[in-house]
Length: 298
Image (cartoon, rainbow, N blue to C red; front, side):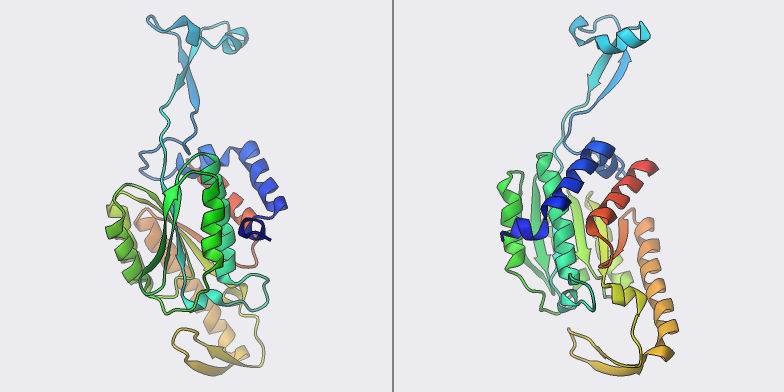
């Protein structure tokens, strides 16, 4: 099975294709609504109509509109502009975790990234890949060729999240590396101090980049389904702690909610899109909900 087939099964591809046609979520929902974006659409030429004025070329008259309105309108096409995207993947050891789900957090992130890569390439937008743990690792330069999807996924399938992480440091490196305004899509469990992470993300925003933060947690990290005595293990520090689940559940759920809410609040302040996800959510449906929500807000 190829890497593309592994992460983009036919039923998922078909779902994305249908969604593209039904909701026009690529054109109208993904980039057109991004805050302060200098880009118009997702590299797709789209039109608006205006009344025919003296000096307009009669060949531009839309005769279908005339038949409906008995008035002359011309199509006004906006210039096509390519948006360069970067998929930024967290390779820290904690991303390799799953409790009961089929996908680890990293597998889930790859599936989501694959869908976005597919969408961008289908609209002829260049997209590249950056991975990080304590610092930036692999970098696949942005391209819009259809072979880029296979190349990107092939690279990801060779990787295993094993390292410690320094999200703020890696994002700061990325901000210094990017030379042109881009769409930066970050996939991470963000298990670091939110204040430091957001501070580094603001550097990307100050560079003129649009940022989408996909916060991916395992379903168990969100819902805490454990019972009895449980041993908690930090895969990065190797620290272990034994707890009584019943006595910990309330405080844990309160803490994880506060943790996500802080990211949400600070991201809004910094004009960063924040998308909280867990691995029990079907990633194509999660993507659809996010994009349609973007469209409805703008």
